[in-house]
Length: 295
Image 1 (cartoon, one colour):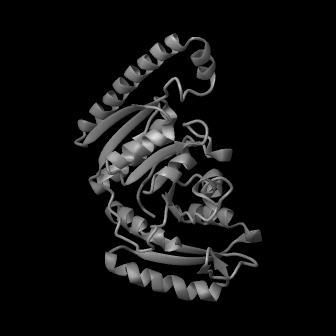
Image 2 (cartoon, rainbow, N blue to C red; image 1 turned 90 degrees about the horizontal axis):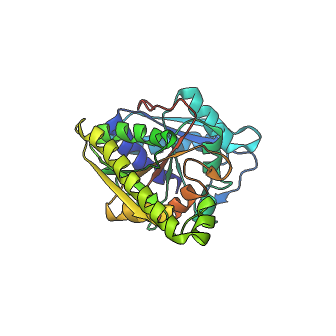
Image 3 (cartoon, rainbow, N blue to C red; image 1 turned 45 degrees about the vertical axis):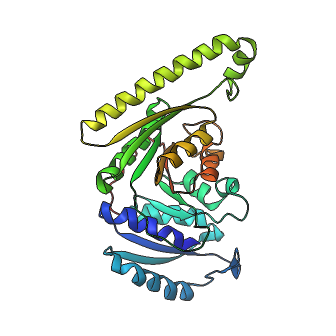
């Protein structure tokens, strides 16, 4: 399951001119198996395994390094973050395992801890259900936007990847309905439903104008850009837009706080992961976010 990250790493790394580093964190008192698969428990085993994997993918025309690290105090997530920062990595690519339900893959998991503790953008990959690894090509990138500058950080990363891969961009916003409103809107929807419905219609119009303005600027740079404004629950609507438009990558900004509360309130990121089978790139909002495509 961990190797499911490799097609995505190669599919993004080759056009970006990046090099790939395979990393294994040796855990203290590690179990012999994880989800029914063998687990590397010592440096010697990892040092034999990683070069073989690198050699297998060497024919893809990309430089692949490998490294074995010991996780201090058994903290795998902290070890991954520290090593990524040490080598100046632009992306961390992790696979989810799925035994505890997709919602649990971020909350309390290694992936969630990596996003929360570090500043390196992290791609979350779901292993294929059939177990067969297929080549990954990024053709369409979905960027959810809500009008905030924080959310637009994701657009910077999406543009960089789109330039390198030739992928088209899909900018999307989701406006709630009366039935899916949350927060303060719940009160107004309950007591003044007609006025709230009219307000949400105005919000939808504003969102459409906002996305079109962003799309127009990108088209002037030669990018193929489409927009979508839908109504309903955010994660569900984004997943539907992604499926309809054959999206290969979603780029989403997050503050990385507990529960991944980010630009999109609540639990959009894990819910989106549970409904979308393609990779999701989570970009930490730290005030200094840029991707260079080196490692």
